[in-house]
Amino acid sequence: MTRLADLAELVRAPAALSVPGDVLAGAAAAGALDRRTPALAGASVLLYWAGMAANDWADRRLDAVERPERPIPSGRVHPATAFGVAAGLTAAGLAVATAAGGRRATAVAVPLAAAIWGYDLFAKNTAAGPAVMAACRGLDVLLGASPSPAPGRPVARSRRLGPAGGAGRSATRAGRVPAVGRGLVRALPAALTVAAHTWTVTALSRREVSGADRRLPRATLAGTALVAATALSRTDPVPAALAAGYATRYGSAQARVLADPSPARVRAAVGAGITGLPALQGALTARAGARVLGLAVAAAAPLGRRLARLVSPT
Image (cartoon, rainbow, N blue to C red; front, side, top):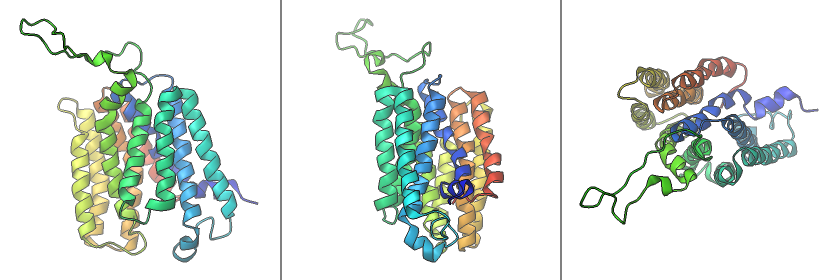
């Protein structure tokens, strides 16, 4: 009989601490933080766990050679059980997203689920793999921005002025754009930032078994520096401090790969990228004006590192 601990290892349960921050960062950027946000974060976690189970199901033959200790090749979880868990969690995630955010959230959650399964079944071992996984996390951020902005949140309006300074007949107002469109546009920079971080982690993860050429950590280090820079704020020290913490921890792990590109160092860098993501999400959330929430999101990083000692996030 499959134990709960084996299923937790299958879905890499502690790594889900890196997931709610996507939705929170997107919601904060879009001005859509409200009672719907926790449920959308829960939907995001369910889809993340679904992707982890689907990943192990798709890789079960490869893992039998390279990682025989994983739940499926070790015999602790039957392949059919893993597939059922992945499918069930996907359905649950879509249902929760729809219940919380309606059709607008569904319009983001469905492509997100498709991207997750597409990565696991088709793209993972292709050149497109890192880009597809980056798209998954970018869509996850946009899931938080999918509902209409929270009531009372000011929405910027712009108009093209006529020659006399009044509004011309061709005036355009941001207020006439559908609310969901405004939210997604406002959250797009945060989504691209998280996607870029995800690209670096995914690119490194493809060398967890074989080790890496030094050109790879050079590229991912440069990407990490750029990602941290985009999370800065010109006036608020909180995003700067959180971004610096993210860059220091994840960057130092990649620097060790640069010095010794062995599989163990690569796996450690991947783990640092996964467990360090909440600090980046916290910086993005704080930059959008939700400073206390940003600090709370970032607090998941040290907790994730402790739990990673019990259940591997990779």
